[in-house]
Length: 184
Image (cartoon, rainbow, N blue to C red; front, side):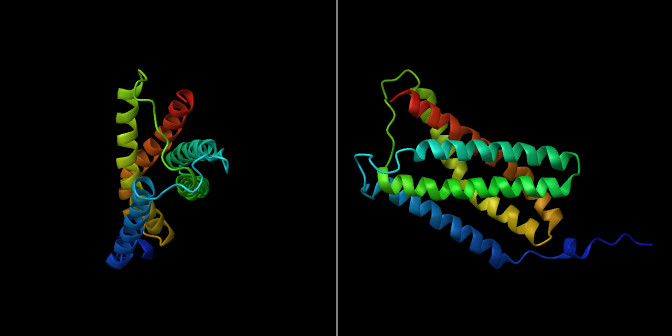
């Protein structure tokens, strides 16, 4: 008897869906770029929602924990636990993104003391964090789309790239916050 793949494994991914995800990710990145370089913050004095950077760091930490848990679960073939963990990672990262946008809208960019001895390490870490977060967003969305639509072979292939990038972005988000908080 020939080996037959499950029906979902034979599905071809619609290019329109991938292009839509990439367009949405590009729009989100353009919005962040606009907020950083062109938007005048509405609360320069920092009187509203001052704890948002801490909230963002906690959300990144929770996403990191969920990602590592999800990775461990898939290694043990516990698919339902993996799905739950990755859903939590997605939820925490989604809330982070909204909170991050609100923080930038209100307070603008956080400046790091360039005379601090950590400056060379900080800007390299921040640059890699920014570049990889821009790459992570479409990868995360595509990986989730493939999983939710039952395209598991394709999901598995792209998840091998998505997971380490997403994990790096989550971990470095916490590190960047700690470094900024320590040097205020």
